[in-house]
Image 1 (cartoon, rainbow, N blue to C red):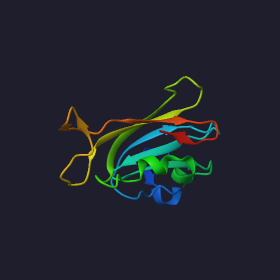
Image 2 (image 1 turned 120 degrees about the vertical axis):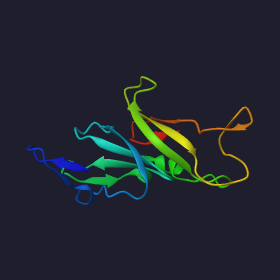
Image 3 (image 1 turned 45 degrees about the vertical axis):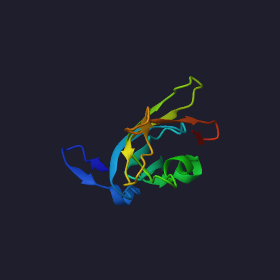
Image 4 (image 1 turned 90 degrees about the vertical axis):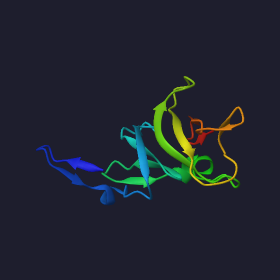
Length: 141
């Protein structure tokens, strides 16, 4: 994350903000999912997805496990391995007034004899997943 000083200079504040990353990150979706007035982040990446809550003081906390996303996003399939997430978007997909998280998966990133993702019996790119927001700030697949 880079902070704009307003004079055309950007300073890397990723580490200080708690956003140093844990791997090969691909995309980010920004929204205030908990309606506290501060933009929160979902970071998509190779073998992981991370939900960061904006603490309102220039720092972020990893709330992936607390939100319920960790069980579906970061748990590799025991037979085929992990997904590679490349993008995400926040949207109220079911018109319930709560933001839902739509995660786009590129492909399975593990070499195996059988592909985790297929279409009509042929190896294919992995499908996106929708995680529906709940009033208790949990997300359900």
